[in-house]
Image (cartoon, rainbow, N blue to C red; front, side, top):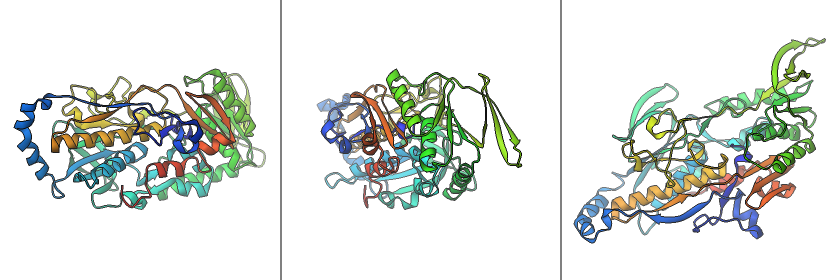
Length: 465
C-alpha cells in the first residue's frame, strides 16, 4: 500500500536502539504513524577480528584507504528515485561527508521518471490541477542532491551482473543501452502500478497533460463518478475527489462486505473507514462486484457509461475509475535466485540480498515495496529501509577502508499498521490501537497529503546531505 495509507512510521529518534512512539510529541516524533521496528545495531564478526589477522591486514587496509580518492571513489548505483532510493542517497552522503572520516563516493540514481513523484499524493494530484504540479519535482530541482558526485539517469536498469558488479542501463529518450560498473547496488524500484493508481508518464510535462485530462473529465461529469475498489487506494481517491470537487457525486463500489477487506486489520478499523468515507459525502456500495461497463449516449447526445454489477444493480456514470491496484514488483532486472515465488526480493534484516546463490550478495541491497518482508507496504517504512541501507553501505565502506567490523542496522518484523486519510479526517491503527479524526489528519498528513513531511524528512531542501 502506498498512498497516505502507506505513510506510517518514522520516528525522529530512529537512531535509538528501538524505535518507539512518544505520545506527548506525536506530531513531531513521527512522520505519520508507528515506525518500522528497528533492532539494536549488531556487529557481524568475521575472521578479521583475530589480532593476527588484523596485524597482517593493516597495510592492506591502509593501501585501500589511500587508493580511494575523488579520482577513485566508491561507486553506488541506485535503481529507483522515489522514497527509499532517495533515502539511501541522502543518508549515505551524510555519513560519507563527515569531517572526521570523509569517504569519496559517487552516486548514480536511475529512474524511469524525470523527477521525484509523491506517490502518496496521487488521489489529490488526480483531482486538483494545482496539486498535480506540486506532486512531481524534477530531479534537477532537488537541492540536496545537486552536487558533482550525484548523477541522475532518466532510464531503466534492464539487468545486473552481480559477479562483475555491472548493470545494463537503457537511457531515455533514445533507448540507448550502456553498461555501468558499481561497487554497491541498491534495488529501489518498488511496485509497478496501473493507471489511474499512479500516472504512467515518464516526463513531468506529459504527466501534467495526463492528469489534466483526467481532472477535466471528472470536473465536467454530469452523472456520478464511480470508483471501483474499496481498498486504501479507492477510499482515498473517492474521498479526495469529493473533497476537492464537492459538486461531483462520487460512488465507491466494493466487491466485499467491508472496506479494506484485503488488509489484516480488525473489523472496527474497516467499519471506521466506511463511516469516514460516508461522512466525506461518498456513496458506498458494498457487495457490489463490477460485471460490465458500456459506453452509451443519453438523450442529449452526451456520452455516459452504463454500469452493471453482478448482484443485478445498475447505474449510469460519467466516469469509471478502476482503483483496484494490480501491483507487481519491479524486479525483472534482478537474478531469479534473489527473488521469492511472487517475484519480491528476499533480503536479510540488513537489507542485503539473502540468497547465497547470488555472487557478491553482501554488496547488493533492496529497499521499499519490492522486498519480501512483513507489514503493509507504506511510504514510511520505505524511507526507513532506505536510511538503514545507506548506513549499512557506509559500514561496509569503513570495513573496506579501515578494517572496522561493521555494525549493521537491522529491520525487525513489522505488525499490521495503517494511516488512512479520508477527506478532512484520517484514521490510524497500530500499536496504540485505532484513532481517527481531524487531529489525526493534521498530525499525519497536514494539508498536502504528507508532501512537506516526506520532503523535509528526506531533507531534500538542504544544501548538503
